[in-house]
Amino acid sequence: METERTDQIIDKHHREPSALIQVLLEIQAENHWLPREALERVAERLQVPMTRIQHIATFYKAFSLVPKGKHEIHICVGTACHVRGAQRVLDTVQDLTGIRPGETDLDLKFSLETVNCLGCCALGPVMEIDGKTHGKMAPAQTADVLRNYD
Ligand code: FES
Image (cartoon, rainbow, N blue to C red; front, side, top):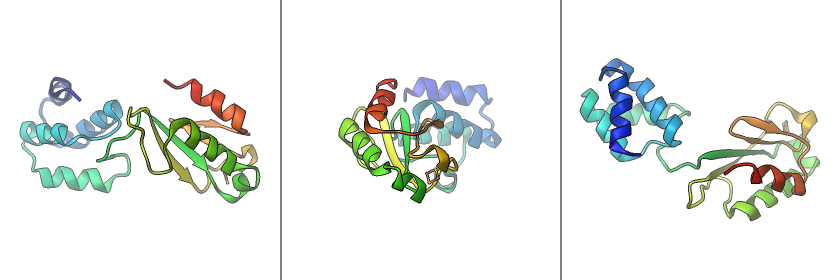
C-alpha cells in the first residue's frame, strides 16, 4: 500500500489517535491486510505506540497481519456440506488457484479457508466468496463462479 494512500486515510480522520481502529479498518478494507510499513506510518502520525496497534491488530478477527488475497474464499466442510460433496468443491478450488486452506496465492488474488458451517446447510455444498454465498456447488459450477472474480 502506498504511503500516500495511508496518509490520506490518516488525514481523513484528522490524525486523531481515537480514530485508530477506524484507520486500521480502512487500511484493511482497501488492502486486505495490514502491512508493517503502513502500521509504522499510522503509529508515527497518530502518535500511538506500535505495541498498541499490534495488540488491536491481533485481537480483532477483522484484521490480518499476513498478506491476504483480494478475494476471500470460504468453503464449508461441515457435515451437511460434506455429505453433499464439499471435498470435490474444495479440490476444484485448490486445483484452480494452486492454494490450500490457510494460504494466499502469489498474485494476492485469492485466500482460501475452510469453515464448519455457513448456516445455510440446505444449500450445500456451499462456497462463500467475499461474503457472497454460492450454493449447490459442483466442480463445474465452482470453476464458473471462480472465473467471475478477477
Ligand atoms: S454444513 Fe455447510 S452450511 Fe451448514
